[in-house]
Length: 400
Length: 193
Image 1 (cartoon, chains in turn red, purple):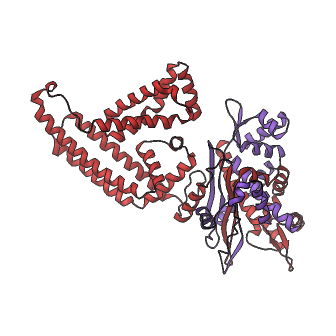
Image 2 (cartoon, rainbow over the protein chains, first blue to last red; image 1 turned 90 degrees about the vertical axis):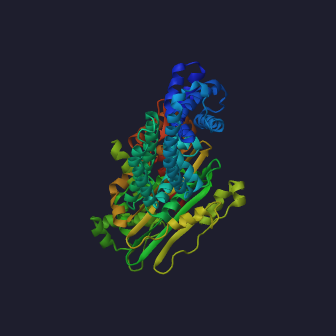
Image 3 (cartoon, rainbow over the protein chains, first blue to last red; image 1 turned 180 degrees about the vertical axis):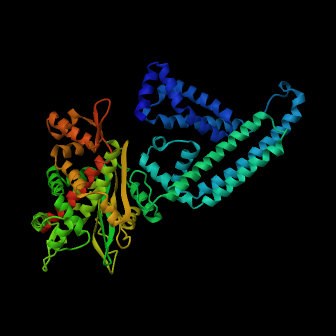
């Protein structure tokens, strides 16, 4: 996306008007929503969009890093909104240009409309503020950009200069938090609906059509935002306990939080890595095993630990399906060769060959009573292969 | 052994060495629980959020339950920070049934091709041309093209419009997992043999 912008900017700087039109089309809705949210006025937001893009056009050659375009664009829009808010807290119109006969009706209907919108908006704002206040600052920022600025995860990532996955994890964490307040949202939504049903009666004949349309549009927008939020919450609530690698959904607050922490690993410094495999599993009778193998270090140092040849040798061990089958059985603990053969549906000699390979690689050992027992990271490696294969199958199946 | 591995890596980077703590997290589980082992490398305080998060994730889940996966993040340049979590909490039989022996063996086979491994190692840095891949890996371009084809079939790389090879799906995560496992495995084989 950034590279698309860079190309567009280059074309604009070369005088391509169509490129500028493309850039405006791409971002005008986003900037309008942003400005509307800031100013609370649909039409003013439209003006701000125009002013913003005018400034973009005039100052584009001063943008030092075209990769930072979206951030720069939002900064311009934000400054425009702040300027408007400062200058237009009370909007006035020259009296001589107004039809005197309309003043009374207009003033009263304006007052009713404004009060109506204000009451509804205040209630909504209170609710949203209360909900957002419960979130961490980082999560609040992402939720605001997602639901109120209607930015997608990649767009937010670009805007804030963090990865899309980080944005997804922050959104996920925020939704999990907000899930606790579903009843509060429902209550507010009911209140809004009630107001929508009663207000037209109360203001009939008192507000003009333009005001009604504006209020209705704003109410619809607010309701849509809350309904979206509700829908998201329902989706999260319906998730199973299985963590989906791509969606970052893990319905277990402690582990979810832990995963998010790891996802925000301290890799701010260039060429750093924090990587590893970990977990726990329980097999009867009452045996639970856990394992963490995790590195937080310079990426070159990390990669240098496993030369290509060693990596290839290691991988080759798992190309033997009988070896894999034996390791799968050993997740349960030590077993005899006869039991392994039966469970793997193969001959004892095949099992012995696989066991010999695994013993040579220090991944199993033979006990004094002639059982085959997993050793070192044998089971962890198998579980890692299962993890990777699940992910890989998930990728190749839809694409094939 | 792990301490040696850690030191070897850290010695190459004096700044890291200054802050480095190799932590062997204490025995967390007692009674019927068996600790396979916990090794955390690098500059990590045992009380750090990261360390505590790792411990939380590795908490046992109950009989015939598994909580397992690979997680991490890396940065090769300020503009390229990537993170990945693939983690499951499930019944162990369900989890294992999602990948057959043959499917596991197929994935492993991909990593027995040294050119594939060399290409993936280069792609950790991000997209590259075949020429650059060949040059940096010291492999003829025709071989690199062959490896790229293999990886494309496995949906692990894609070719961009400007003819650059870009890692796709979990290509880099898989490679990093192989590095992790090989590192651990080398540590074990060296000490046990």
